[in-house]
Image (tube, rainbow over all chains, first blue to last red):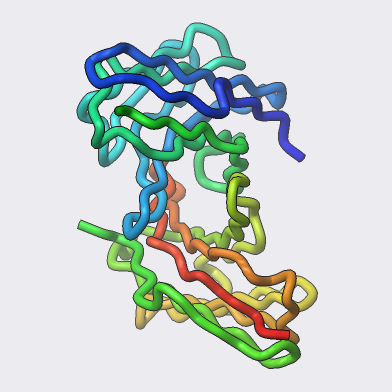
Length: 112
Length: 112
C-alpha cells in the first residue's frame, strides 16, 4: 500500500471557522491531489501540486487554498468553512501525473 | 461539464454471473484510463488500467475494454463475487496533463 496519511480523519466544525487538512506521503511522489467526494458527484478535484511550491486549481477550487512546502506534505485549507464544504476529502499521489493514482483513507468534514 | 460519465448509478448481479460497468468520456485527449473500487469509509483503490494504444487489458477476473471511436470503456468482472460489492469509479488522464477526471461512480451489488 502507498504510504499516504490524512489527518484529521474526522472533524466537526462550525460555519466560518478555518480548517486545515493534512496529507503526508512517504513515497516521494511528485504529484499530490485533493479531491472531495459527494453523492451524485463522484470525485472532484479541488487542487493539485506538481512539485514543492507548485500548485494549480482543479474544478471545484473556490473556497479552498493549498500549500506544499515539502515534498511529503500537502495541506488543504478552508479559510472560512461553509456547510457546502461538508464532504469527504481524499488526498491522492501520483509519481508521473498520468499513471496510477493512490488514495489516502479520507477525511470526513462536517460543517455545522 | 462532466468529462467522464458513468450513467448507471447502481447495478445488481447474481454471484457467479458477469458484471459489466460502463463509462463514457468526452475529451479525445484522454489517453489513459483507470478503474477504482471503493468500499465505504475507505479510500478508492486502484483496480485496473488501460492505455489508449490498447483495446483490452485483463487482470484475473477483471477485464477493461476500450472503444476509442465511441469514447467508451467498460469493466467486466467474471465471475462476480459478493466481495466485489463496492462503488466503482472510472477515471481518465492525458499524457500532456496532470489531472485525473473521475466519473460519478456505479454501486455494484453482487447477490449471493
